[in-house]
Image (cartoon, rainbow, N blue to C red):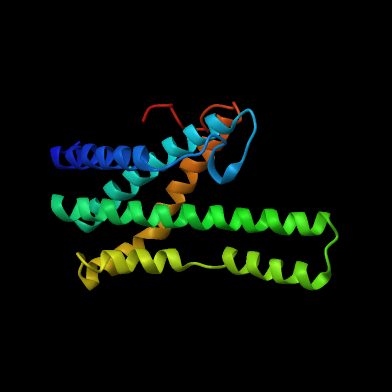
Length: 183
């Protein structure tokens, strides 16, 4: 690998690790989910998030031919983007739990409908990408932002593969086909 890319990976891992250490965590894992696997689930989630952040930063920096300073700024923007996505997922999960409780308690239709609208509204919200592009507008020109937007679908397919492999690992099935286990 090129020394510049290795430096980017090292810098991203350093920033990612320090951000993970600063993130508050409860004893039951994210979103208050309890159970015997809560700690392991949180550990795997953090490891996968770190891989995704590193992958996104390095891949996008390479495709946009960014210098080291702007690559680090992109890494920070990716971190904020992933934090926003995580917060939205946790909020959606909490609201869905409230909806589930209302349904189980056989609450009045009006109350269930209001909570249903809240859950559907959160699930359909895609402000994360707009906020990510707004973050990158501070250091990327319009052409670079366009390249970023065009690259995201392809890159996100790879990210979904990382998540799928992590789920397989959590379920004890090991890495997916074509994965040699090396990072």
